[in-house]
Length: 323
Image 1 (cartoon, rainbow, N blue to C red):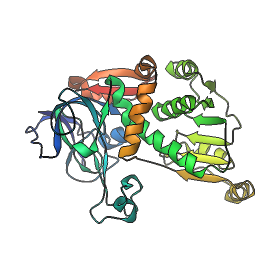
Image 2 (tube, rainbow, N blue to C red):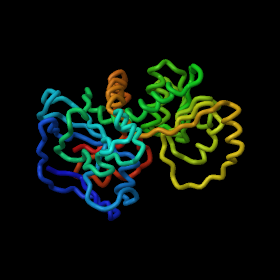
Image 3 (cartoon, rainbow, N blue to C red):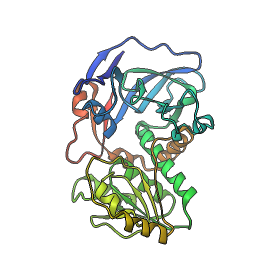
């Protein structure tokens, strides 16, 4: 099989490699790899900024077609769950909430300790595979992250809300807005892009696009920009999904503390997802307009041109590498 590998000890080591075909175990699916989505974590791995030592098959946003295995018909489209629980396990992993692992000994396909899905064949335990209905199922992993964000918002909200602000119109922000619209909320999206696909994607979704930060009490933050996060600390309920850069931003923590206390505010972070989030994410994508989801994928790159998939270009929203 062909696979996309990196040497985690060496920056710029992305390589298209021939590897032995995988042999599935009795509880595993054998899957033909069709595509992977590219995100910021993948680019960090390729640049040598994430992970240590060893060779890794990358790719965690997966789409494949079942060849054989239990629980799925041959030809079915599936996505593979990324994280696996730690072997100890911690209190969260022991309860099946491995996305909330407390001791950090989890592994992740294509990220930490386990080969990923960027190969023309891969195997996955059937319990960690989720059915999808179309080629836009490659978006199920980022959608699962947002499903979890909404789940936690529901758990923590102190009041019913009819409106939500999403900051950032990248894939996570757009999928967060999609779920808000599906819930019947008044959705507002803040981003700095003046042109390109982002404003059109927001408006065609039925949400409102802003280039000036609106004042909304409930926020899903999807940029990871420290300067923006600092402006949101006084809101009523803020979900942080973006991984920040190393930008240093002065923040009046005393004022932020005062605002949070006096408003009974909540700021929380969320990352990763587990099997139930993937299943709900698949349902979210099924309810969405497939043409809108397809428009989110602004570049499709063939495997032979794999290096181009990891370049960030103006106008990119989601880049997909076709296997």
